[in-house]
Length: 410
Image 1 (tube, rainbow, N blue to C red):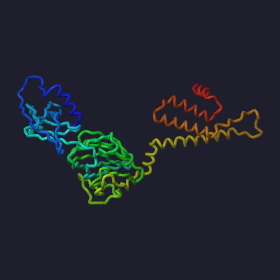
Image 2 (image 1 turned 180 degrees about the horizontal axis):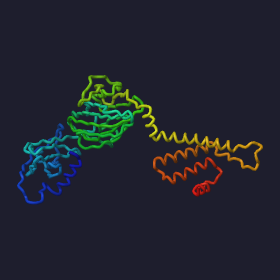
Image 3 (image 1 turned 45 degrees about the vertical axis):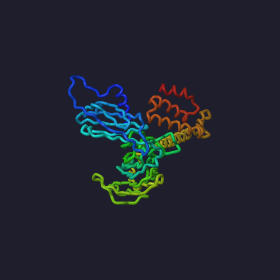
């Protein structure tokens, strides 16, 4: 049950109860749905203003109806004359202290007496226990030097209170946190927890979903880059872990995980994995995880990757221009040299720019080329500005405006 659906239900309740379709009225089987709301926190009582919402979804997945019922003094409720839809789904929910509790029923179970349990809240995330966290290396692209990974986490809230995250209180951690390798991207998170957001925090992310008492599952996938055959990072395990495992495909024979013990291999849907394991990590202790033996691309692939990166061009363009301009200036000095017997009426060659000015112009040309390459400068403007900069190097005494006009005439 998502928050969006609950909001939709609340709006719909004010407009209609159970809708009747257009056209001739046909007899429809109905039933009364009975249930009870109880407070699962020891010593706590139910507030008197709780309401129970019902959402009815048809076989086509569309919203077919809504309803609302109040609780009596004993916490009991009833929805009267509820239409029984073949292959329909009936979601019952209660909002208590900002957390939605509920259940989903099929049409065949509407006659059962329902029990919806709500809980008081806590902001102490230390109550959460991670029973198992498994990191699976799903694939390695050695040409792009990227690793795809999926982590499966099974958590357990053994208390009788719901963990309700509070991002405004920096003195107490009240939300789940997970570490990621350096440079991780394309993060996708799924869980059976109600609502919540995903927030980037430190070297990982935080999950701001309430955690109801009982067992829950979370899984998240991501991609992370590597430059050398070993990636090392701090796997913090903020909530601790009874068992932490890393599974590596057998098809990558040289790959291994340091700081963990090699245990029996695991087979998942026909794929064999080498398993590395650690146990009984207290909250916050974690480990320095090292993934070694990552396959590196061939020489040509590494060269191609470096050529396509922006860093390569930021270095290569100024270097190439510096060499080219140095050759041009040397050629100009040689051509401008005259022996003592030469005609004194010949004009003296230009001294050119000093080294500091020349370096500044070279950097300006490099920046201009990079901007043009990235598509941020029209070709005509790029050509004009580049000619002016080159003229500045080759003939620094000339008037740039005049040079520009003469070049346009040519």
